[in-house]
Length: 446
Image (cartoon, rainbow, N blue to C red; front, side):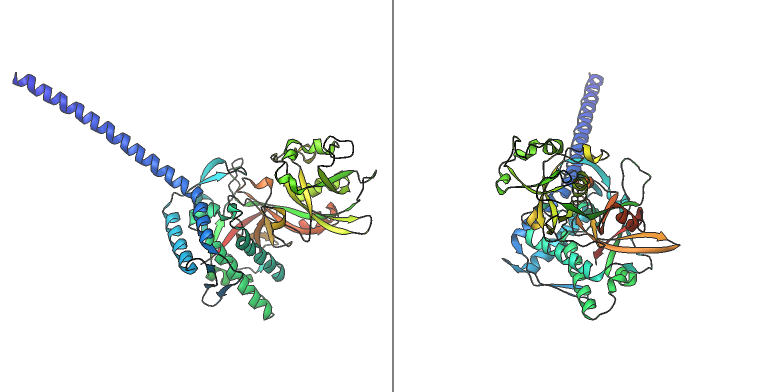
């Protein structure tokens, strides 16, 4: 009886132990899963936190930075004590980011998750080599100021710019990006006013005042690629006509204001548009406005580059920039004439870069502007590219102030705005002096 009783006790204890182990394993698995999900969600919710910050803080146009002490002196006008809000947010945000998983969830242009990458394999601390950094001082200042003003004016309307992107994994926040822009603007203004070469061209000054973060290319289709591919884009000048002629027979159109509500244009491919549906006799005649007629080559270059400078036969000359597209994705690798995506244009007063709507786009300058993956890299990032030519290292600085369909997502390429050219031959001669691949660095104010 005692033996039987002992067997029952052992059997009972054994079952209890197995149950305990099973429950503990399940609890541990759920904890790990919850933690992993929370860490992954932090990258997506950071912009929501920043949107809250924006709702509490309204920016003025004055941001003073002492170049000697490197301290930002903000003249923010706020509903609360804005400096305290910004400091508290920047501190807590940075602590959260540093504590977060190094994994970054990459999204596409429709904000859909594509894949995750380990940030430490793509962005790492570094130093600039000891070569002069090249750029036009006045042009860089213009792009810095215009990009900073975009944050100031449109942060509440365009939450995409409140994404820190991949640099989240290095503890970089949006306030860090703004501080970087502010500091550079003040330094450039001082140096230009004193008629001296700017300190931003000195790698020692940069290494002392900025965190330098190396960007190693991540190309899912070519894991061996380490340097960024540097493509080039431009504004081409084309002759055009107000009316259709035998030579200028390919239209560019503008959407009317009521098209914000009526999305009829999203039904039609580029091929549909060019078949004449908006021309007299076409089934959608009168729904859009014709801006100009170009050659087919002119149209394709305008669509590819995003901006075109048209010399009209009547002597008028103007820039036209892409406004809205038909919602169809750009297909990488497909020839231009076969793409279904079609862009509608608007007349503008300068070369335009990134912007959530045509009236808000950033005015940009050649030689100091990069187009890239704004959603996963972030608007306003200051980037230096390095390449070797003639046995010497060459450095060039610019601002990510533009984007395009080929960059969503794209963590291995930048597009450099080379200039305004008459034709492809002139463009080719210019870009032959520029690298096809380069080492890239982000600059973030310490």
